Length: 209
Length: 277
Image (tube, rainbow over all chains, first blue to last red; front, side):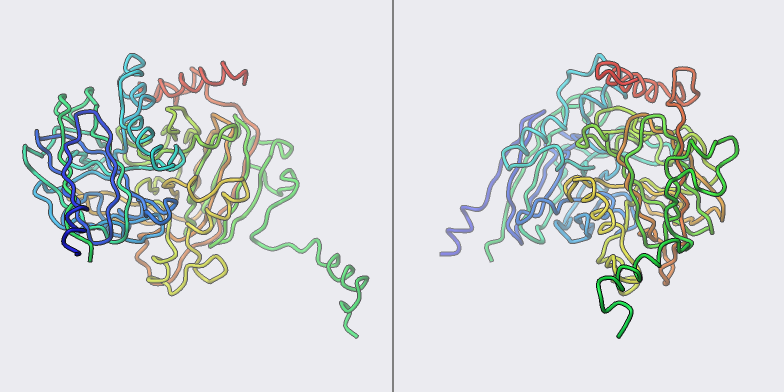
């Protein structure tokens, strides 16, 4: 019985370039995010499915592991420090926690007012989040899988050319029931997507224990 | 019979307590603060308070306010959140603040940006240079692990519950609380992404903010979340604010970076449409 049930829980989905995505993960399930085309930033938020006021906190995650990069072993935590997801495999090497999402608004600062009406990750988060009853208050600093944001000794930071390549993947294990919100980043004004947004694959596996 | 056994006795007892002065308390009115900053008339003060280690405070501040935070004894840690008072769904965005200005570290001329690409406040003076925009504030679980307790009523309060309390008194809930920034305990990023806690720059250091929009300011004075010391170490924070002027195109902060300039222009555009001077 459990086998049939589990199989229904499994999912593979290709998220189109520039599009949003969301899914529920049951505790113990794993989500693999595959960078099909290489150097594609995947903006990512997650919430405790039982109470979405408890949500990913970049700050609590960074403080707990005392490092700004995510890789195998990193635990994505709520603002109260509770584990939501653990990185159980990572063939890329490191991922960003400090750059946040692109928005029409921040594009106006980074590149100029002419970019104000380009599609952006915050648009994806808002429209996809609305399906789950989430609104603007629920958006906070997010993870950027596959995005490369070094910090120099003098504090200078920036989104630079990626270190990912086609087929690399990162796998996350749900430590509780988790709602995942994704924006397959549409940014074309910096190198986070190699100036060419491409699809990414989401595979949900396991669980049902 | 005790003096508080009757309503009249209890009233007298309560009233007799007024006028007590302690180190950590607000001065009401703010103009009664005994030592206004140089060049500031006492009557211009709008906020004067000393916040205990482990305490919090909050205030709605006018555009143009100058807000000075002072680390009186050298181990304050002022965790700060700002919201647009006219629409608190617009709030401090630390990711945009560091990304847009290409700088992970807070200091003079850094604009504190909202998620709407506007300037909530500008850092106009900073004698400390030891701050953090990456680690947010402390959690109950983290403080329990490090100090044995993290509750607001305990000996080592965490920042998250204090922000939750301060937010509630401004009609805001847990969903309204993004990652915060903090002043007076430094953190630096190493080349491998690891964090180095560099601590305090010493007693008497201060940071001045200029409010560019009317803001709800929430402040928690609690030990930094990556402070490695075994004992909960946080000393009083002095908060002074006075009526001053917002930045103008002539201000050095306005043109400090092209990104900040556009943020000031967005802010001016918003204020003009709204009819705010």
